[in-house]
Image 1 (cartoon, helix red, strand yellow):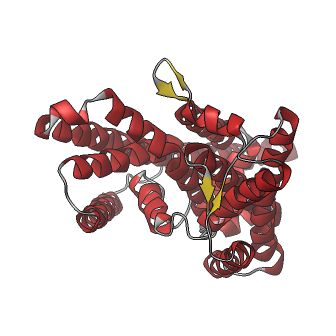
Image 2: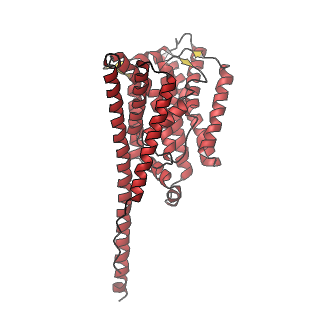
Length: 362
């Protein structure tokens, strides 16, 4: 009797669990479709920008040297944008990434001057110098992670403060001057190509693929998305928020450090004020690439395409002899249009009538 009486309750519980699983899968599918829509939109913008400047001035824009310049200029910006995207996925932001990249570049230039002359250092010494520079970036990211995950400071305030500290340390160390000279092996690498594709761009793509795999195929990536979508639900699900945030900002610091290495490989100088406008630029790229500033979703592919799009626009503006101020206006217009389109799309989704969920039989 008792077994038979419990069956309806067991069946009700099974149906409820099934409905919950279906609802979760539907929400996950909707989120993926939103991300795919953003990536498709970004691909259209990239192709449109390329086609526009090809039509306006094909002989100059399609010149192999110009295409190479676009590919060489993309990695340092793209790596910083991916670093910013990681922090945005958790609902935060990292304003210190450019300062960390400059810290890495200054470390490499300073150690090269100490151990060699005009970049003449041995292979092992070069490797140690690069490791030291990369370590500076990791340390900068770890400090951000500690302030945010352990102390509990809001990401925008924590990284704003560390940005000022890192910039101040760089200015004090360099005296506000530009440092010259990096290992010649690094300069040679920065000038090398594979099948006409710059090796620096290959490094960018490899790093982007690695981050994409981490986000979509590892538990850490899932935790980043869940935390950005709903931190309270993630906490109740057993996700250790502090560890996730710490890992996020250390990864962000690592990508910023890699960007710093790319910077000195491309241009063998380092200074505290290099890339002063990069913070705003990478924010534009991350959001343009489909990253939700409030957290929860974003794609590496979208950020890569957004990086290429803005580099294409920058190159096109130079070819058309338009000023940097007009390029700044164009970036702002592109960002505002993207945000307006996203907001209108979300409102349409919110206003759509939802189908009632099937009720469990009593």
